[in-house]
Image (tube, rainbow, N blue to C red):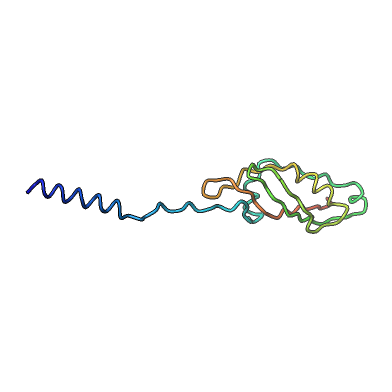
Length: 127
């Protein structure tokens, strides 16, 4: 009797393992790049080079903002930089400075990914 119960239990386990079509859950594919707000990326900034106020802009009393679209690579370096708006006298200075910025990598589910964000550089003349 005991032998029959053991044989029956072993057969049930074998049948269950052979009939199981359950596959392990597929690993979710993470995006290569995510869009992140400027506020979030500011908290990741570890090296910021301030732009030099261009002499010509200062002499002409030009103030304002330069808005850039940036891609921060998975390593934290700026990999792409495009001008969205800004005075033509201020743009080169902003580009030169921001290209040198360094960020901590943005982690998505523990993995570093590229970040698409906006960076605003302000130019204000001192009184």
